[in-house]
Image (cartoon, rainbow, N blue to C red; front, side, top):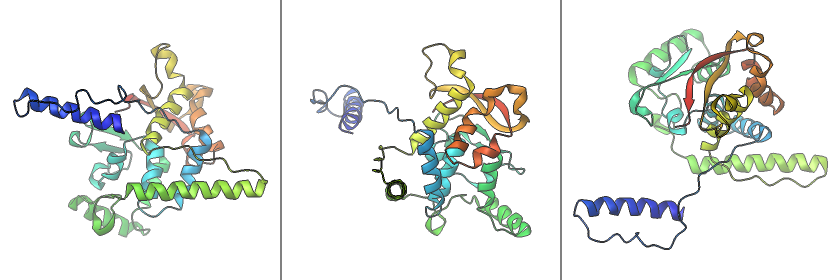
Length: 269
């Protein structure tokens, strides 16, 4: 955090010096470590299962946001800012406009069956009421995961601490039953879920080999969504990532494993 703050300060004062607003950059010779280490945390299959189950008991809308992050691998802000008008009428795709993406380019996300089920659970249970509510929400620009007073969710830090506490409690309970010592939870961030999904899919589909030995799985890999086509047409590796999720106790991955559809290249933005 210290190194990142220094980098931001140095860049800001450098910008000001170039425009003649200040004459000295106080961050120029600040004695801090060079560079800022890049996060490379990738959660294990068991950890993803723990996060999924804990999110199921977390308060709304945070728990649903976390589960959608696991299912789609999208950015935290993109999911939290999702509005109903971005979802296609048949719930097959979620299209983010350019102003909501990091690179400014519109981004289409195919939606799997478990993802659609999660989204529809945000609507009234009655079919007619759900259609009526959906029309109203789209017309008014309503958020899918609205917080208090219909505003965008903002309590990230507090909710994350509660989620970690729930995971630790579950570990302690399991350890007590097995008469063993609970394993400490390694620090992780919400963005690590995106990296984990990208890395898991890349490893399962063997994408690294197609981009060379220096390829980093979480940086770039063809996006494949488990939906629609028979997995037999794509080989035994087609379902590996989803099956790992099944073994970790993430039930939606079981339904995603029914098939797969290949989409455009995916770069972690």
